Length: 496
Figure 1 (cartoon, one colour):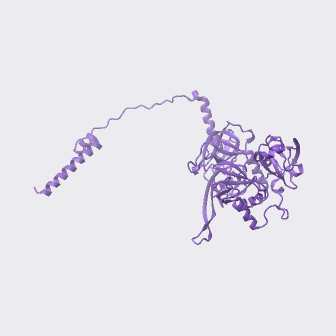
Figure 2: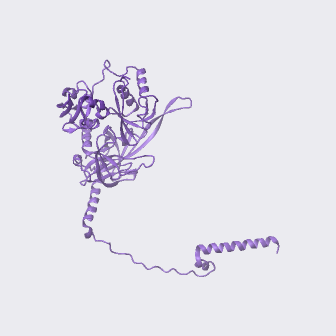
Figure 3: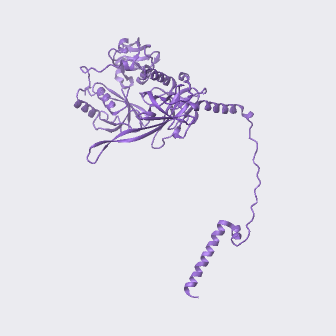
């Protein structure tokens, strides 16, 4: 036998042995029998008996059984009134080419959220941030039918928009409940379309009340009912299926780590939503009360407290608009508002919330601290939009030229950009060194208001900032890492 044939036989033998070992490991003795022509052992079925009786009868858990049926009944009654909202639009993006020239590029955008039908005519309430800046709006009903929708009006400050479904269908609206009767601990249900998955209902309780995400927003309900992206605009309902809130936001300690639900969600109280809805449907815009004062929190000026000898809570009047309800009532600068219409005032945000909730034409009693004692006066509330005085060119304390405007912006030192996520406010992109903002404002802050007035764009931010900083101390309402922060910058005209 030559050497080549011998080596071939050795390799074949090694291969056969290795194959047999692996086959035995994987298939066992029955596999070997089958390989060599034997019959594998027949499988003998295991004997088993499944239980046929539940551990408890329904009569044993009668209360839970009834609660289970009632939850299901409530869901069946509420879900047909909740809609899914899909939006599409185009936003512009400013870019620089290789030669430093600026150009604008259109960028398609899409959004998704929830809403609730509130009239038999097909009006839908949702959040303003769900449809903000979008050109196309589609509404998907409970039965799967899809209709286009038009924007009737919105209230950005409250974060509410009203849509009208364009199409013929039988709409099942939900009734508004009275949010003033909501109590901590009561059971609630959040309904919506989280992550675009479809109709979803979660159950929880009212965890807290009178929460606020910023100084420009009214008090919110806090709930532990699971609210996730896509739930925005959906209803928070009580045990009768009434709307007691519109889900608007969730608390996220760090978007980069976890953007989902953390057990803390926020809803806009239904009484505020209903007032905004009725004003929009009747007059095309939200109607808010107007008093005509600029104010500062007392805690920001301890020297003023000592000067007037007042130690209690309140809000200081900085200026009074000419011809405003405040001037007619007799309010003066340096007055401290102690209570408004019987409600104690602890901060300017609380004061402005009370004013905005007042009805136009309503007479309110205002208690102030003046000259070492409290005094009462009455004011007749006017409509905010109609009462806003136009600035007079001759008496304007602000800068009068573009050079002065640029100089004010440089001294304040805040460079901003419009946010990409459709949220209210502007995002701080840079802080100039040796400026008023250095050390007080940080990159990444979202400025949502100036002196209690909402900011919705870079242009509006710069206009309000310049007008205020040139003549008075300026209070910025900021959202910093999902927490409301107030920063007050001194006036540029103040003595060094």
